[in-house]
Image (cartoon, rainbow, N blue to C red; front, side):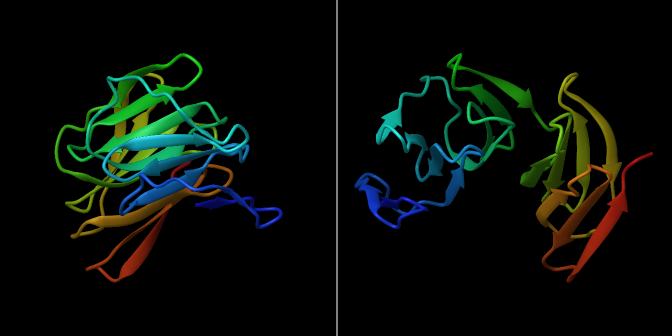
Length: 173
């Protein structure tokens, strides 16, 4: 079930979610993206499931909202990353990493850059407009567990479990 964050009252019960692996509130707080065996988007205000296009990638492992409450970024188990505009209903592959399995991702605050943490320990930075790889940050020997941008987009922090440390990069240059 989903509760109203302001009042605590139950908004709706959704019986079809077995073992959800990821939940993400939209920036406006009006939608929730849920991954279990597939991706579901719930419109909290209308209390119903949003119809998604049939050509969404199978086996999603993570989802993030980009910008407003109509843009979703979907990480698939084969490391492909798909962008879905809910208002247009058309998904497209945003980035198809060359090597390795993506284990973490984060967009810069302005949405122009995408940081992909790979299972081999590298972090690849992509330009989201051109879909090209700009650089590879090295420093870990095991899978990246988390990656995030500073609020102004000038720094990137990442951690890897087996390395037992976090690294902060200045990415302005």
